[in-house]
Length: 296
Image 1 (cartoon, rainbow, N blue to C red):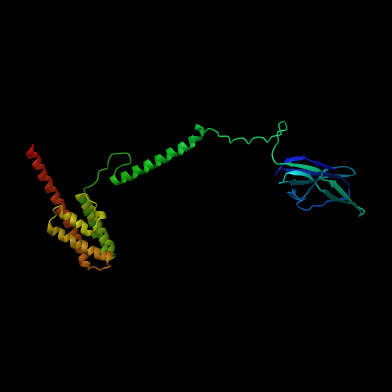
Image 2 (image 1 turned 60 degrees about the horizontal axis):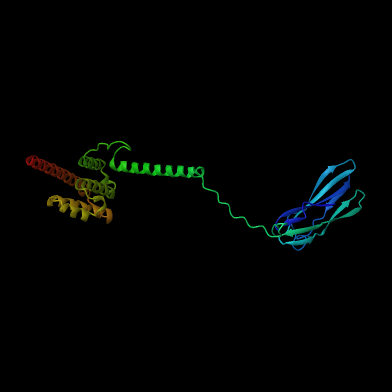
């Protein structure tokens, strides 16, 4: 018995052939697997499957299924399928199933006009506010994170609270002298001369940058001395600073090993420079105040 799910399909569709048979209890049933492809244009998608549909007092009703497809249009007379019923006494019956006929079409046909159906245009759905809301939320969160990060960086540079007024800071010369005092107490030059001179000159560069308002941390020793010459720093003071920078550059960049006494004497030279510049700053401020008061 043969039963096809449909006898007309489109190219690439799957369809199932069903073959039913009854056997007695104690008999065996073997559905022979056909060769693949079944014929030119018809392919079997998986091996045949046989299931038991019902169990009676005298035997079983079985169904074998073959799933096939086609990628070539046309009319096909399917081959005959074979099964074997092995009886309990050892005899074998051969069962043949007619595969039937199959029509494979390329596209759907309008039966009233016998013209192919037009291909429908792609549907474009409008972009809704509901779809845009998640993206808008992500964008807002991203902007807030960037804004907060910029505020933090700016606050750290200005040494102020994140959203509050600028925090009071100690005068630059006090900060510099405290750093030099720590260097003197730690005696770093006895352990690492390069680290000692790096900390020493960085302290001087920070102070010079805050006092004279130019990027001393980004300039070479020679460039710093040139800038100080333009700001009327006393020649003797500049000469002492030049010697300190020269010794520092030798240790940091030329792997020069300085005499411990020269390292230790560098600290008082740095302190003298800071104190002298600070005193000069106060004197200049007093002179300017007197001029302003006299002018009023």
